[in-house]
Image 1 (cartoon, helix red, strand yellow):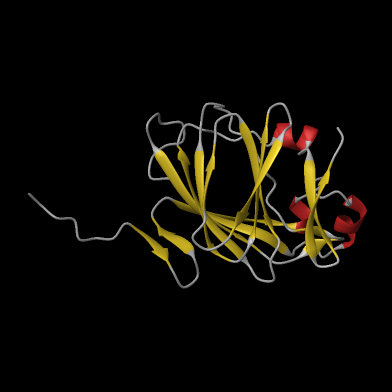
Image 2: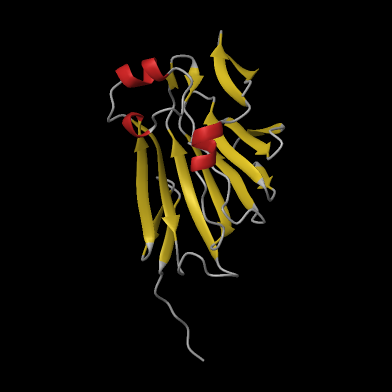
Length: 189
């Protein structure tokens, strides 16, 4: 019997980022998020290099591996495009039978989940909250707080991502700051 004392992966609780072999770090800037926010004109006039959110993703096995898991940390900056809060692009899994878990570690926000019939469900996210995203459900996270929103996620390695459907069809609601209150607005499509 042997003990592997080398730490291959680490979650740094100071900066809330994953480190190690096979960790991929990306960020989405204002300029990367065309057609994500309702007011495209306002988005296009903002500083295009401003980061909206960053992701560190641990892929210890090849994408598509049945039975494997990925884990990630997302940091959504505090901010707005016009009156719409910063948020992730949102996606549905290509393997529509896939589920996912999110759990909050810092800040406050909302998890928006939308079924294929466009009915939606919203859960409040805060440190320690856990959110189950069922199969066949598009999902996005919105930072409605006054600081960075940080959350972790775990999902199947064979889930895949379908961003195109969300890009083309959008979500059936949006979250706006109306007089300092996060307000849900239904969207007709």
